Length: 254
Image 1 (cartoon, helix red, strand yellow):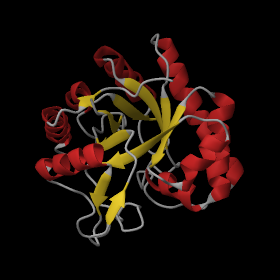
Image 2 (image 1 turned 60 degrees about the vertical axis):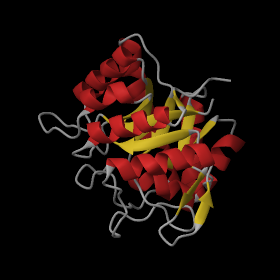
Image 3 (image 1 turned 90 degrees about the vertical axis):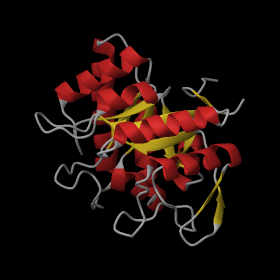
Image 4 (image 1 turned 180 degrees about the horizontal axis):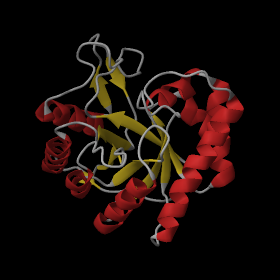
């Protein structure tokens, strides 16, 4: 049977300001990428989201972002390698502490937003973030863009990697994601996103916005928790994957 991990970016509320519908989404996913207080989230939101993940048997991941709450971590920043290392150590360490306090452990690390793409574009930043993960928590897996250079860097440093594909985002012909400012960058129809998810997982390929067909390794499939329809998106994709004979489960450990 074909198997896929279904991950979601979540834990992005701050205080009384609610973002997403984490409790409604959690039953449909198998891995949660939890904001660590830099681009979004706070200590109480982290605790609640970790607790919800534990209750549903969902793998816990640190969603490491830029220190840019105003821009939700989606704006490119000038960042030197030492700062990239430091913010990664702090965020991974914080989520580890929260998880440990609840009797759980962190499974993986995924960069968020602009940082996700900056690591593929800048080898020095990519090396710094991978080294930070290795130094603070060498057993954690790292999640990154399928086929991207950052995953190769992380693997070279001895980290286990998960190649990520996206159900609710459109692709460029070079394998990157279409910028959110471009028309059609986000797939808003749960049915269309589910179609793309099944194709990515069963065929390991997807049609890009310029009609090129991309071959992509799919270890984990991402949806976004900050959407207004996040619960419907997660449920529709999960149901369609299972109807297609695909097992949705946390990625196995070697």
